[in-house]
Image (cartoon, rainbow, N blue to C red; front, top):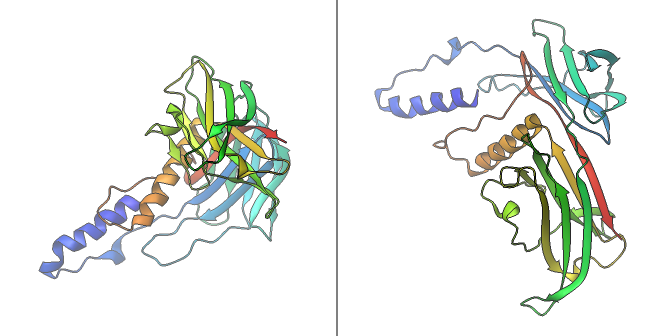
Length: 289
């Protein structure tokens, strides 16, 4: 739809001098179910359901509370999800298992087609954990420098996708937050790696397929002084989750520039007869106290 809108606006610019009217009222648009669920091995399934609207209509998409959302595991029915009227999502107590295949089917009243999707939670038994070195030297400003090192092994014979977050504990917010650091690591500095708005790094195993890797970062010792101090969140993403998150990051970055002459970014979707995402990630964590 973004591509259609871009071409339409471009046509207006080219034909403005001829003062011809563009018959937008005759452009047909077929609404679809929008289904969004990024699930993992730590939290129960949540599925957001809405209906797409034409960008020319001026109608703001609304959550649908009257849909039927069915969840299956390895082709066996598990549950019909309930609706949370406060937070506007469908939920179940089911938590995804690593290696299992899940599918969702969504039906809604009216003329909207039934939407469905299938996804498998990827394996992550290769996480070596986090090590911390309190003092490795002094930086250019005279501050003592500390170091964190992450170790993991990539599965051979397949394409793998990851998301990595280094975090420090903030006493003010009583939560773990991203922080700035220095690194020489080729993975984090690779042009193909996406540094997301939430501070995480998204990358594939193209540079190290089937190998054990160490990722090292450096930062001032005073970054965190209490306990706990630091944490790492390391995720194995399914290919669908990786493509969705990376294209969404690219789309949001493009929107912030607000230029009509950029090539439009199409956010990845794996919803059959609809739009959105149904995909999973397997999370591993480690904390330095």
